[in-house]
Image 1 (tube, one colour):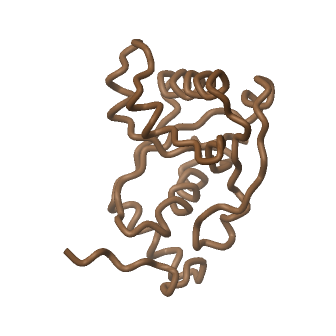
Image 2 (cartoon, one colour):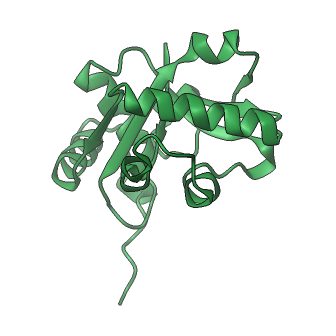
Length: 159
């Protein structure tokens, strides 16, 4: 299994081997309650499996935006001593809620170590961006298959 997280790849591409920036650490890697949120994926090289993670992420937000997903092997985190805990995912797609996992008890040292693991995974090419058109298709398919009730979707904000 792999753990997948949505990141803003524009920031990560700018690193070019340099040190992690405060912007990346404070925006892309938010850790409410000293925990970082991930979604499990059996094989991120399988487009269908990765699209399930994308669906879980975009089914609830008010704005539909492309997602940039970075993944790393779950075993790598376990071997590095990170504490993982299954937790219900914040998504209206009921059959995907159980694919969510938190990396717990992050202190400064573990937080930076996890950020470095994500950076290495990104640099190894373990990332993919899924555009808005594809996400719309995923949402419509989930609605048609009765996986995503229309009533669970938030209306876009009125400008």
